Length: 169
Picture 1 (cartoon, rainbow, N blue to C red):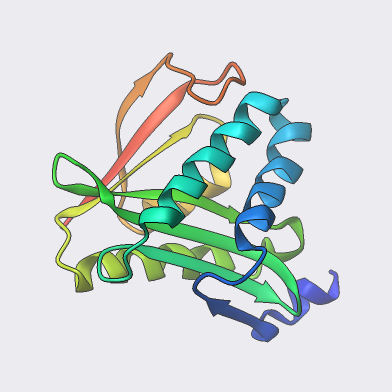
Picture 2 (spheres, rainbow, N blue to C red; picture 1 turned 90 degrees about the vertical axis):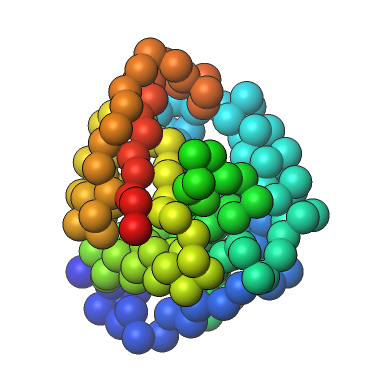
């Protein structure tokens, strides 16, 4: 086991910090490009959507959580309270680096998002993902999310089957 997995106590969790947007995109591409074949359409979609979110970010309704180990981003999750659908806020850009997988960081980030939504009196949370991301699905279900819809829609451009999970309070 490498040092990052042995010492998760050195991970500090913050809101936005310089490089966060670029590093979130990098973490996504480090995983999704080699594993799922996602390329330029996915990367530009991330950049545009995260950029738009940060331009309208409001700490009173939105969560932008980053986890850093030293100067490296090792995880993130966003709760977009400005993107409400059926009364539910949108959980987005959840990712944990290879180095931080298995440390419990992913569970802490999901828990942080759920607590934030409850504190802000959101009706619940929805997220879209795709089948095959079993570790993430396990974390969503452990937090109380349920799969409510599955379709052939592929907004990411990788030939995947989209899923929608919801957690209602």
